[in-house]
Length: 615
Ligand code: ADP
Ligand code: MG
Image 1 (cartoon, rainbow, N blue to C red):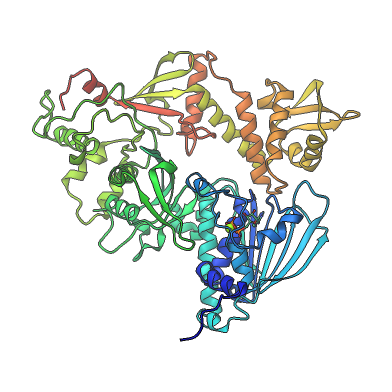
Image 2 (image 1 turned 120 degrees about the vertical axis):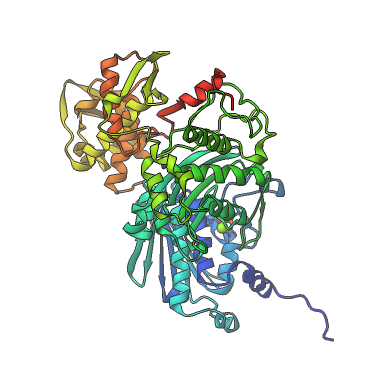
């Protein structure tokens, strides 16, 4: 046997690198995750020859300080954790400090970076783990990393790579998932000089789904949103018409990370039981936001394994929520007053002898609320359960389900809670606590938060008018005067044109003062100075983005927030007008800041509370 010798550092690095970097897609993954961890709002990945000869990832994140640049390329150097304990709370995507060193060990790497605080940027070249150059250069804030000729001096590794087209397709899929997992980040992929994907970073998940999966899929989506015992759920699931023969359309993310989980896949498929044929799998893009205390993450560098504590409960809640979405497609959270009673034995039927049809309905509702396993669950408090019903979806199920039977028939008689052109059927009962409106609609008590409703209506109106350049301005007489900091002034200059298109006219007024000559009519009544400060703060968060759509929605968001105040008594007539506008919206259920606008209680729930029905 040969003598034992210590491997040199470069060999050790190469072996270690193999764990992290096995193909171009893993390079792109690590670099893009670093960009996201660095707070970037825009990330571009560019590849040639499937990423084998060229990968460039550019971000507008916080950059790396000059003295830290060589450090970042050493093994186990990271700015994200300091000790093993931090592993429990880490929120960033990477934290092992292995990616850059591994990539540099097996390729030719060039890094160009600049932080906001420093005057110049830095360019660093490292090849096969050997430092070649560190120099000062002029460059915008953020980081660009170029990786050339992956595995150039390890031909054995290179042999394991597939064709450029296949490697490129892995990268495309990866970048798509990154875009889907971060709707707040503008993600761009350029393949052989052609842009393949470019998302706006405007928080709109549906836009991203459209960009990736196209019109056919996007048309057939149902929004899903709701609470889980350990967090919350949001995203979209497909109707039965967009199924696939394998699981590649099942996308789910936990706390911003794409994962594979048999538990979630099983829950998803269970929810589609009876809707999809055998061996067909659904479409979904679901974001689960979960308390980190509820998951065990195995921090293997390339695989993401997650185990859930109380996995059974998560499974049941997911099935219940998703079934609700499929049945109804509406998102009004139901609520429960006081603790839920213990479910009664199955034989106990409503005391008021119902019609056979009614009996089935009640029986089914009870079963949906208390599946057999849950019988012992005490005090199960109001999860915003998504069990609404809609005639449209039910009809769809009837049409497309091979097992459609009379059980399902009743769903046809159930109706949507929010319906356009039916204002007369909504009976406004009155206002509660000067904030909430009680409304009767068919067999439902709806409660609308006037503040949230008003915000939503105003937001949609402003965003549309900004977008279509149809906003009406009102001259201010006398003009309001604002004193701006240099940073604020820079923003007003940078976004002046767009502000003007949105109906705000600001002109320099000497020194650091600006005069506000005009405001959008709808905002005329608000405190203009306060509002403009809010808006300028919002622009500050855009990090130089030029996407006008995004900027307009930010301005609308800030505007509606400061234009609407809670706790203000509004008349019934004003409420009627507001309700009419609300009913017109595509999504009247949540305000632009994500809070619910409408909650409801069914007559049945109420009768249960008063023990008029016993079930
Ligand atoms: P890790 O991400 O696990 O910390 P890496 O080797 O990927 O390890 O990166 C090392 C360090 O380099 C990071 O902790 C971070 O401080 C810095 N870094 C890497 N990429 C970027 C980037 N795009 N922008 C800013 N800092 C970065
Ligand atoms: Mg990293």
